[in-house]
Picture 1 (cartoon, rainbow, N blue to C red):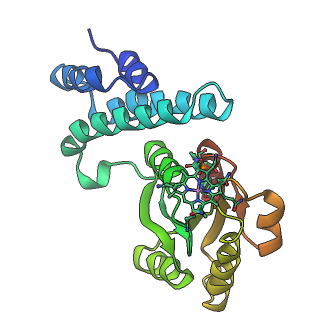
Picture 2 (tube, helix red, strand yellow; picture 1 turned 30 degrees about the horizontal axis):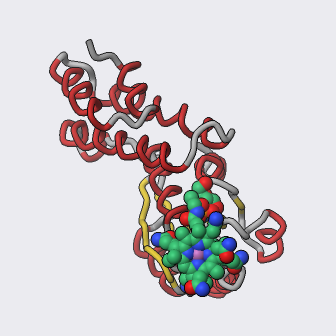
Length: 210
Ligand code: B1M
């Protein structure tokens, strides 16, 4: 019999084969859609994040967990009024100009969505002006940048400068990616650094006071 705990377990183990049946069973039994999301699906992802951070889970497993979570969310979403779908806030996410690496960035996006943020994924090779436009258009209060090359880290500083010049000081700019460090973030005037996807979620929550 499906329970909120067994749905959480399907997320943790990335069990794409079973999660839809389990979520449907809960829906048919009259379980509140928000409970399925908060206690079942997000509940599972709340276990995955810290395990990934602690090195107890690896990238493929986290991707499977995020996929399973997505499959569950798809079933529950139509049952929620648009306004009921909980969102902690909007985050613009992209890989900086000149950089085509997107595996880590997408992982951060999936984890942010799983945590409850609305993610505006602007893709790869994103110029500073395009980050700025996306933040203005979406009203996001956080812009998260990813860079995997030492050479493209410089585009992070260009983006920070671009926001400063535009007077967009209420938008928090955060950075991450293998060559990036807290020291570098401080040096370029970014508002935060996250070494991994789980920490990126914690950082966004902290910056928005969630
Ligand atoms: Co490239 N590549 N690559 N590559 N590539 C690296 C990064 C490199 C370290 C390999 C090496 O030489 N050892 C090296 C960079 C050297 C350097 O500058 N220090 C390198 C190079 C040189 C290049 C090319 C220049 C190679 C060439 O063409 N001569 C070229 C550049 C293309 C370009 O971008 N303009 C290139 C191309 C490619 C591929 C296209 C083949 C492919 C990318 C495919 C894709 O992304 N769709 C690729 C890959 C796969 C890699 C490696 C092997 C793996 C990267 C990865 O996906 N890691 C990488 C070597 C390595 O890291 N072992 C390498 C897994 C991913 C989950 O981790 O992205 O670090 P990561 O994300 C983590 C955290 O960093 C953090 O959270 C994630 C999850 O925990 N995080 C954030 C990431 N973004 C964040 C944003 C945040 C917060 C946290 O916002 C706040």
